[in-house]
Amino acid sequence: MQQQVPADRGQRRTSPFRYGVGMFGTSIPINLIKGSMLYFYVELLGMDATVFAGVYAIYGILDAIDNPVFGYLSDRTRSRWGRRKPYLVVGSLVLLGAMIALFSVPGSVAASATSLVIWFAVFAILSEMADSLINANYGALLPELFPAERVRASANGIRQGAQLVAMILALGLTPVLAQNVLGCPVDAVGCTDPTVGYSRLAVIFGVIGVGVILYMAFGIRENPAIADEKRPPFFASIRQIVTNRYFWTIGVVNACYGSAIAIVLNGLQFYVRYVLGGGGLEATILQVAVVVGAIGMLALWARAVRRYGAERVWKTALPIAALAFVPIYFADSLLTAVLAGLCIAVGYSGVLATNDLIMARVLDDDARRHGIHREGIFLSAFGVLGRLNGLIVAGALASLTLFFGFRNGADPGDDPATAFRVYLSVYPTILLAIGTVVSRFVHVPGWNGSDDDSGDGVSEHGGSPRAERVETFRGDLGD
Image (cartoon, rainbow, N blue to C red; front, side, top):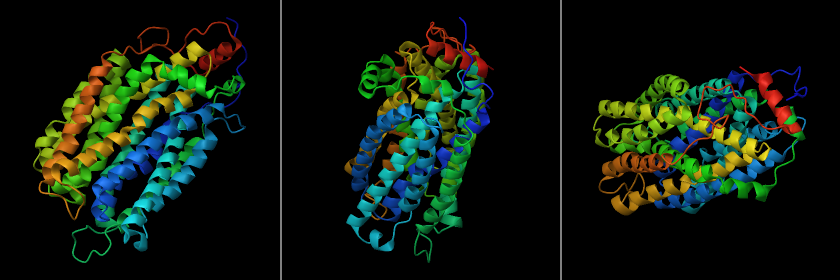
């Protein structure tokens, strides 16, 4: 095959570090939101848990709807700044404002149950939409910027490591920072406003997160050859995606995994308070231990991926992750909870190390078969299933009121400890068990129709001009 001169000749290529560190910026805001929003509104502001669950269900539905729309718009965009960069910049700025407002509830609003619900709904949904816009574009860049699998795995390893570091800050340190450094614990004598620490932290983490996103966005170099491709049609793309067998297998597995993690993020501060009898410091110790453990295990899982391939490691990590949530049910002290949390870290890091590599292969397969790059809408369509975890989280939360009488911090029911043991252990175990079963029916596509993860990222596309341009671009990036 005679290759054409690539359109990007002479341009700088995107550094895997520059791209990967962007995950630090995207993760800080959303982890603060996911990890503290429930505690902030239900425990500190007294919102009824069933009301929160209702709003969260709407949040989940809108989250699922806007994903394919954002992906479609991104795939069709042609601008001097590229397809993805404009949305990363706009989305990050909207997220900054919405997140700060979400955790900065005026006293007059907090005093009215109706006003509080409206405030929560508006800014939670706006934050969600901005996060969807950012991640639809950020995730779509991985297969485009790094078509060679070894380079792709390196970039993915950097971004997953960056995500875990962000989790240490936005999840692990949030309780102690918000309750003991920037604010005060809800039960402390003389604490008149236990929400102020979270409000201040939202500003700090928001500014840091947006700064890193912008640093990443202005350093990426998209493939200019893709601008010559035909713009993907919306309905035809959706039809092809939903009839793709991977949509209903890998998509369901990812949804189960995402729902399990969302439940844990939402409920961990409650678990520490009602099961362990601890506060911000104990919550920080437990979360930091889990995330640091995951960071340590991530390197081992990455080695396993290089040796055995992403698919085999992915299918091994899922059942380990399911079983890892069992010990947290029986923990009765901070020490035993930390040990149980380290078990969770083992399974969590294994899925984390492989999920995006699995998805990138599906995107490669779609581009190869249909001759068009539509990573944004494809990932976003998959995200419909994943983002519907809002409905699962809402249902799990509502079940605590139904079965255990838990409503909020002022009315926790007769046995909140058992309620949050079930919430943090039983529900994630069930979800990941379902994901494990479904994964057994998946055979992930390979670069050359094989299952070899060690390939150099070059696949046969036939003789079309588009294929030649993309193939040359791939060869240029190389290893």
